[in-house]
Image (tube, rainbow, N blue to C red; front, side):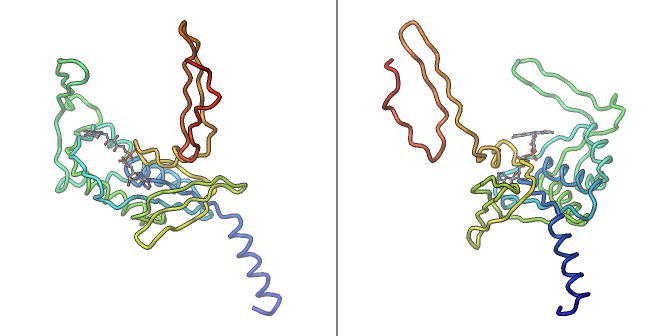
Length: 222
Ligand SMILES: Cc1cc2nc3c(=O)[nH]c(=O)nc-3n(C[C@H](O)[C@H](O)[C@H](O)COP(=O)(O)OP(=O)(O)OC[C@H]3O[C@@H](n4cnc5c(N)ncnc54)[C@H](O)[C@@H]3O)c2cc1C
């Protein structure tokens, strides 16, 4: 707008835009969604939370058991409603075998938090994602993180999508991509090296960055 008032409004909007904090969460599994819900519980309107994740159903999800203690955590996040009894079956306990031949019984009857659940994992995650959407987060499905660049403001993230690569900026990034550690693995950390003297010579190891050719020249003889 041409008048002074319009310019002031534009200025205020510009300032507000500068003060907005962009939080990018990589992953929309239980960890990503719980992080988003926690941020949204205490954040003001000046925080934009966006969850980027790969296409749901891209990986096969097994049915899983949710122990009763999880109910308390979901309740704290205002998300216990996702445990709909018509979708997830109540579970009275579990038998597990870890590392040994011994079967360990975990009877939920004695748990003060109540019953556990046999989860329909896909429905569980879909319910959680719907909640974060309703509470003001942005969801970006089918966005696979490809590149990370740290800059003075924060991070520039590049995602692969069906329509090509998409770049975005974030002030803070939460890596909730599970075992994949999609963000952490792409951080420009200096490679770590180790040199060990053994009786027959040196043992030398370096984690190889994807873009750094491994040079054999100049290494001590072994
Ligand atoms: C066979 C099996 C059985 C299990 N059984 C149980 C059980 O009974 N009870 C239990 O409590 N736990 C169980 N677990 C563990 C449980 O599944 C994990 O602890 C849980 O899924 C971890 O949640 P998360 O949100 O950290 O990661 P995930 O659920 O793995 O979510 C990762 C998210 O990151 C996204 N992502 C990954 N890489 C990228 C990328 N490059 N770009 C963008 N997005 C990305 C994915 O799309 C996804 O949204 C089991 C695990 C396995 C494998």
